[in-house]
Length: 365
Ligand SMILES: Nc1ncnc2c1ncn2[C@@H]1O[C@H](COP(=O)(O)OP(=O)(O)OP(=O)(O)O)[C@@H](O)[C@H]1O
Ligand SMILES: [Mg+2]
Image 1 (cartoon, rainbow, N blue to C red):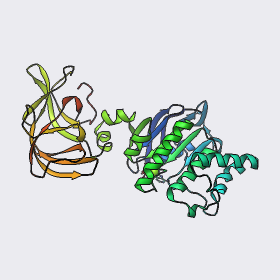
Image 2: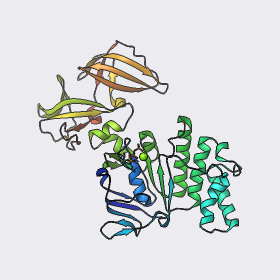
Image 3: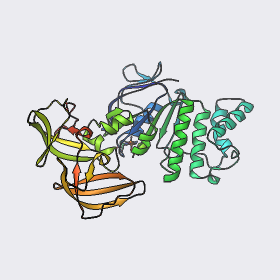
Image 4: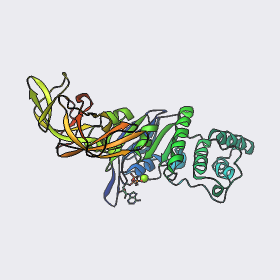
């Protein structure tokens, strides 16, 4: 097993950058997800690691081995990189049975037949498909086909797993089941994994660390918790979290010797350790971190319930308050009704502040 190191890798198509001087270190056994909107360069990055796409610049290494280096003029072809790859469309051969699909690559490696049979039954047990070795892909459900693709990857015993949106063809329920299975599998095999998705839930669920990408660059790399609670910039803050984070324009300043966040007419006292200097800011607060009460409490903002959207385990509530709409999330069902007057509190310890110009987090607050 080995880690992966990408140093300043770049790739352009017809002069248009798809990946811009991207650097990323993935530790041995780590599950790292590339998360970002369509077209941000996730697949291109993954294909460069696999060697299916030639980088324009930079260096790619796995463990001690340099696979690509512009400077050293090095390029190792995909088949010599010992990587396992699952594409977005899982590409099983339709005219071959499950057994045939898995055996194909192993036969090319000249592994004896007896051993191939052992490997096939072992990997099919692992993905819970024992007994289906003679079925054709068309005789399997989407989730089962997906598991065959996973089994085929494991059978190769690659040092690295690369997966490009492997669950995107599955319906919502199956996707959640397969997430569980992929997570369990990673626990058992501890293979270094690079996983690509534009689904933030999938990224938060599966990853040791997430690299959030936008326009060919990594905007933030961190644990799911870091990405969720301390988004490095407003793009990450908006992209991760459902429903979307609340962004409130205000000002930080001092009043009575205390740092305060001034939102509309009120000043919210910030934690004592805050280092402040007067500045316009954007405060970000998650919908589940806002608290409400039916009576006015000191420091609260009056609002009117605009819309209540129950979804079983949680309810999303939109509130008109201070010339803006604030999103709130509460557990279970809510007794609030449309047009009801309520008071909102913004807990200062749950807020992050951003520079409105650079959109970067202000670390002093
Ligand atoms: N073979 C190609 N020729 C020209 N442009 C390409 C090629 N492959 C990718 N691109 C462009 O490079 C950019 C990055 O593409 P990439 O496939 O890496 O995005 P992605 O993040 O995987 O998106 P998605 O979530 O839609 O799969 C896009 O603007 C895309 O149009
Ligand atoms: Mg892609």
